[in-house]
Length: 243
Image (tube, rainbow, N blue to C red; front, side, top):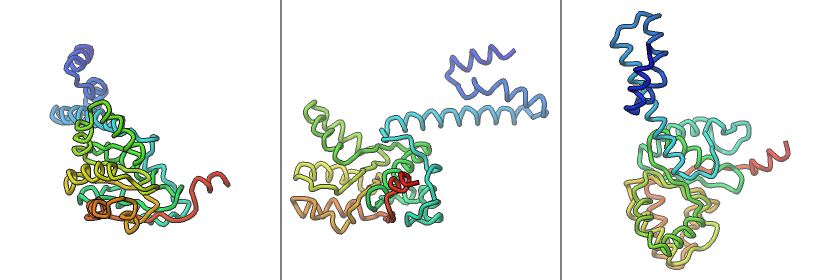
């Protein structure tokens, strides 16, 4: 009975309907649904399937280090972030306000976890996201330049809705590195959102650059506008090792 529907929906790439049509029809018969209600439900199935497919592609392209989700964040250890603030972050208010997000704290307190899991949630909300360890970013920039793909690479970063730069400020940056970073941030200013994890507060960022003018320009474009979250406490990895 349902085979023609399965064949048609598969050929039309309506995979949500393809997977759920039989169940929806059986439910409609059992619960005496109006045809319009049946149509609404199968269209919602298709919409959800497409959203899930988009999210899967965005997560794959983001290149997160690990598959991390906010639901795995443990509140059993005090890391200086209240449940109210955590909920606010989970609702992606900073993104909707077009504010950058700066996650500060010592090593091991969960900065990368929080940044990546927020990135994963942004992907599921349909927003393109790219994760970069800041040092590996500059290595990739050098490789792209050598291959003649630099402009294409930078253009892609400029257009991405959310950039995550992990471990910013662990070392000083050369003039060329600073120029690349400023170029990326300049084009994204008030258009895209950047999430930064760092052990160094913004007040100390300017001294990381050879040219203080460029350093100030980079800092200004990250900080204004932004929201800062300070994570505190002992390394969560150390706590887990002790337990």
